[in-house]
Length: 370
Image (cartoon, rainbow, N blue to C red):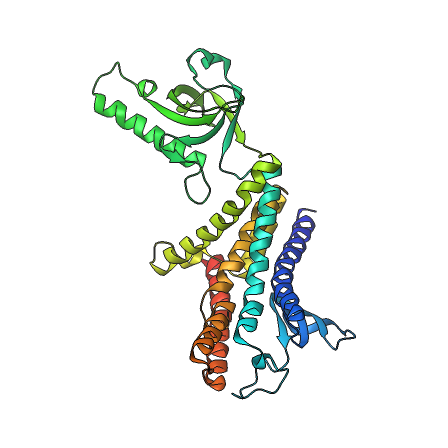
């Protein structure tokens, strides 16, 4: 039964990935239709066609075997002639082609913004937290109140992209408290004597930098029956669910923050700060979506804007075969007033596509092997 359930979540994950690809290619398609480009095929996936039909405009609509991507093919798009025929893709003005290339990325960003809005309104952004309960055992020493929304811990802003997560901020302050205890060199001074600040918004809407937040020591028994010491602030927290107005104001920065996380990860990969097996291709992405969804269905609302931002950033990179590279080549043509040799350009994109396929296969293998 558990295996069958996981298979269903795998199918759900594939459906989500196909949805993301559909959104991207739909951007190219809509822009092409608006600007009067002739579209020959709109396909989700690669390989053998599972489903295919031709509409009244002569556009072939296909669903193919391997959900590793998709494409929106335009008439004459791969033509190697430097003097394209009228109506072919390369006969249109460079600015129109740039719009078509960018439209897929735009749709992914738009999807990231929309699902960020939904996430912030329903489950919170997994960064800003709210006090939902005060432990009565420590209530006389707690300077926070139930309903306080915490935006900063110490000088660290709670933000998924441009700051830190709450647990990281908590652990940092705890490390500072332990350092404070060690440096005091006085048995009467303990971690509970260390205090720090939090920037909060109270129930009445006022924002205050609250001083005097402190740790409380608790002793619990582990599975072996041994005493272990833990530290608490004496409060229960949950992610802050934004009002619609707050979510509408923040979803833009939240989505672009996710895109920034993708760029930062790429930089860390290129500078060997993270191992290549820490990233994954389509197969490991499907596995991640399935596992996260099975653990908590709400995780989908977290993953969808992240994957949308990921696709947008990835496709905007100026790497051969990606939209960013097509935009770059077309921009050079616009500036030079003549194209780079089409045969050379097509060969560059073909090699780039082969490299990309090889890369995603390798990272998927490494992700599961290492």
